[in-house]
Length: 125
Image 1 (spheres, rainbow, N blue to C red):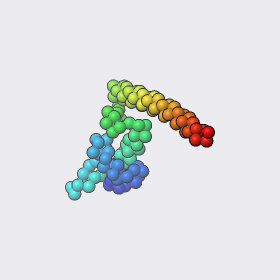
Image 2: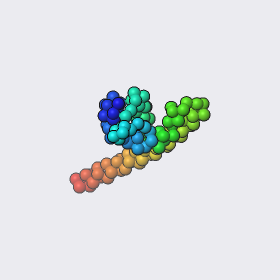
Image 3: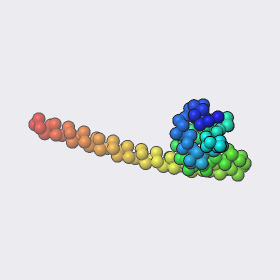
Image 4: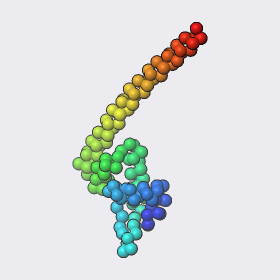
């Protein structure tokens, strides 16, 4: 199938398919005229890539996980699980940082409201 059909069947844009190829996530065979051709297996692969992106993984990380799919083995599975655990830890740290930032902003909002209320009573009094 050609790139447009793959994109349509996988529910992504043609641009996404091209990006996946550029990043080494997806491969195609080229016709003599240079057109990309894909098999039905690539539809499932694109859906898998989409799930990995939705889980917050970067294309660089996804490339590291693909040997688990392309050459299944205990070693590749162990490597993929370790890499996903690292990414989960990274996301957890980021979430903790965001919660601290939100809490600081909440404190600033309280201070700003108190100041505004103080201005209101100072002007009225």
